[in-house]
Length: 100
Image (cartoon, rainbow, N blue to C red; front, side, top):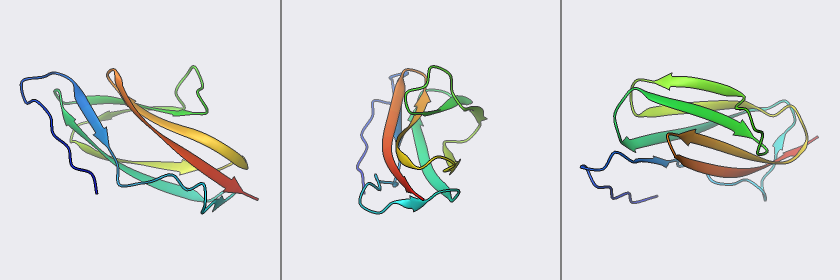
Protein backbone atom coordinates (compact mmCIF):
# COMPACT_ATOMS: atom_id res chain seq x y z
CA UNK A 1 0.00 0.00 0.00
CA UNK A 2 1.30 3.44 -0.91
CA UNK A 3 0.96 6.56 1.18
CA UNK A 4 0.65 9.70 -0.93
CA UNK A 5 1.17 13.25 0.22
CA UNK A 6 0.70 16.18 -2.10
CA UNK A 7 0.47 19.95 -1.90
CA UNK A 8 -3.11 20.94 -2.69
CA UNK A 9 -1.85 24.33 -3.95
CA UNK A 10 0.39 22.63 -6.51
CA UNK A 11 -0.70 22.01 -10.10
CA UNK A 12 1.45 18.86 -10.36
CA UNK A 13 -0.23 15.45 -10.51
CA UNK A 14 0.77 12.22 -8.77
CA UNK A 15 0.07 8.86 -10.42
CA UNK A 16 -0.22 5.82 -8.16
CA UNK A 17 -1.18 2.19 -8.70
CA UNK A 18 -1.66 -0.91 -6.59
CA UNK A 19 -0.25 -2.98 -9.48
CA UNK A 20 3.34 -4.13 -9.01
CA UNK A 21 5.91 -5.47 -11.47
CA UNK A 22 5.39 -9.13 -12.37
CA UNK A 23 8.88 -10.21 -13.43
CA UNK A 24 8.71 -13.28 -11.14
CA UNK A 25 5.10 -14.11 -12.09
CA UNK A 26 4.77 -13.75 -15.88
CA UNK A 27 1.43 -13.56 -17.61
CA UNK A 28 0.56 -15.65 -20.65
CA UNK A 29 0.82 -14.27 -24.18
CA UNK A 30 -2.56 -12.87 -25.36
CA UNK A 31 -3.75 -12.48 -21.75
CA UNK A 32 -5.30 -9.12 -20.80
CA UNK A 33 -3.78 -7.47 -17.75
CA UNK A 34 -5.72 -4.85 -15.81
CA UNK A 35 -3.57 -2.09 -14.31
CA UNK A 36 -5.62 0.18 -12.01
CA UNK A 37 -4.28 3.65 -11.27
CA UNK A 38 -5.25 6.87 -9.52
CA UNK A 39 -4.28 10.43 -10.37
CA UNK A 40 -4.16 12.96 -7.55
CA UNK A 41 -3.74 16.73 -7.80
CA UNK A 42 -3.92 19.06 -10.77
CA UNK A 43 -7.24 19.72 -12.46
CA UNK A 44 -9.61 17.41 -14.29
CA UNK A 45 -10.20 16.26 -16.92
CA UNK A 46 -6.86 14.47 -17.13
CA UNK A 47 -5.29 13.58 -20.47
CA UNK A 48 -3.63 10.18 -19.93
CA UNK A 49 -1.25 8.35 -22.30
CA UNK A 50 -0.19 4.69 -22.36
CA UNK A 51 3.25 3.70 -23.70
CA UNK A 52 4.92 0.31 -24.26
CA UNK A 53 8.70 -0.22 -24.41
CA UNK A 54 9.68 3.46 -24.55
CA UNK A 55 7.90 4.06 -27.85
CA UNK A 56 7.87 7.65 -29.05
CA UNK A 57 4.13 7.58 -29.65
CA UNK A 58 1.53 6.38 -27.14
CA UNK A 59 -0.49 3.27 -27.96
CA UNK A 60 -3.55 4.94 -26.48
CA UNK A 61 -4.72 8.33 -25.22
CA UNK A 62 -7.74 8.81 -22.98
CA UNK A 63 -9.55 11.68 -21.33
CA UNK A 64 -10.09 10.76 -17.67
CA UNK A 65 -12.90 12.80 -16.09
CA UNK A 66 -12.54 11.27 -12.61
CA UNK A 67 -9.32 10.43 -10.82
CA UNK A 68 -9.25 6.63 -11.32
CA UNK A 69 -8.71 4.53 -14.40
CA UNK A 70 -7.78 1.02 -15.53
CA UNK A 71 -5.38 0.21 -18.37
CA UNK A 72 -6.43 -3.07 -19.96
CA UNK A 73 -3.19 -4.15 -21.62
CA UNK A 74 -3.41 -7.06 -24.07
CA UNK A 75 -0.07 -8.89 -23.99
CA UNK A 76 0.44 -9.75 -27.66
CA UNK A 77 4.24 -10.13 -27.68
CA UNK A 78 6.24 -12.44 -25.42
CA UNK A 79 9.27 -11.11 -23.58
CA UNK A 80 9.90 -8.41 -21.00
CA UNK A 81 8.17 -5.07 -21.56
CA UNK A 82 8.04 -1.67 -19.90
CA UNK A 83 4.56 -0.19 -19.59
CA UNK A 84 4.25 3.51 -18.81
CA UNK A 85 1.28 5.68 -17.86
CA UNK A 86 1.80 9.43 -18.21
CA UNK A 87 -0.28 12.45 -17.28
CA UNK A 88 1.02 15.98 -17.70
CA UNK A 89 4.75 15.79 -16.86
CA UNK A 90 4.46 12.79 -14.50
CA UNK A 91 4.69 9.07 -15.23
CA UNK A 92 4.69 5.66 -13.60
CA UNK A 93 6.43 2.65 -15.18
CA UNK A 94 5.93 -1.09 -14.70
CA UNK A 95 8.01 -4.07 -15.87
CA UNK A 96 5.98 -6.92 -17.30
CA UNK A 97 7.10 -10.40 -18.35
CA UNK A 98 4.97 -12.21 -20.92
CA UNK A 99 5.49 -15.94 -21.41
CA UNK A 100 4.40 -18.01 -24.40
